[in-house]
Image 1 (cartoon, rainbow, N blue to C red):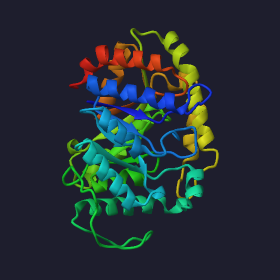
Image 2 (image 1 turned 135 degrees about the vertical axis):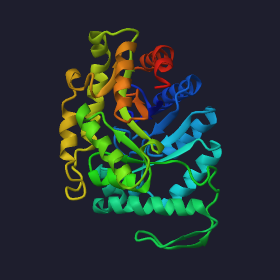
Image 3 (image 1 turned 120 degrees about the vertical axis):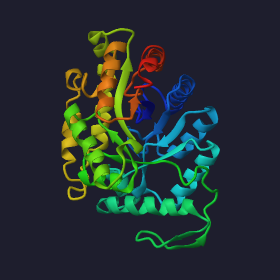
Image 4 (image 1 turned 180 degrees about the horizontal axis):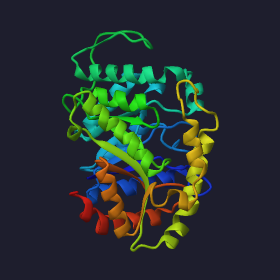
Length: 352
């Protein structure tokens, strides 16, 4: 089992300014690098408190590359419809070189209407832009020159991508899927790894959607064992099982996180391109402690958490993305939690 830190933080300037929050995240990732956590994933969002601290995740990951030695650094995810894939290929290749091959390329469609409106992108094009964009990036990385006719940008003819990619043939590719069966199936058909953010659904729904991907891998003649599933959950760790204490610590930050998410999604996405996304919003509205603990999070004392991780491993998850920085949860509480994970959880679950 692998573990990552997944960052979709809540910007709350009345609690901590951007500089303080950035420095806290750097401290968390440096500690994760030391204790053997495998990944750090950085989201891309724009203009919103829900993840909007990271409109430039390649810049932040490049800084982390210089501050760490072994942890892998992933975009969780690059919102391809909002970006020129050529620029994405260049930025990703630069990060891959700077990290000496510790980069993982995660992509997604995005769903926040304000982002699409401000960048002038039609949400109905999002799926096609992702599929074409990944193909363009891969061909740009393959070299020696880019040759690509695009529906959405001028053609590429005879130009090299600089710098060249470090990992050969290319960095691992992950696709963020949320609710659309078509997304899970396309990800499997192409042979990409799955990024799934599961904190807004109950466990049986997560099992079903991961099953979409795993079944599709077999349908397209691919080996399930050769592909990875990273599932993202809010996480917090205590010295011992104490549900009342856990509720006291996480209830307010979790509520703040949910409120920021609803605020970001105040305008619904295009209903034809994003069928069923209203159910996601409904899932976020019920963020009372009993609604998410224990089945939507990885939280509690070591015994509880280890049992939960075993359950997640059994449904085919190969990496748990730990969303440890949410709402106004203080830095000292986050670091205390991480130290418990390092000392009392990670040694017990690393080899399952």
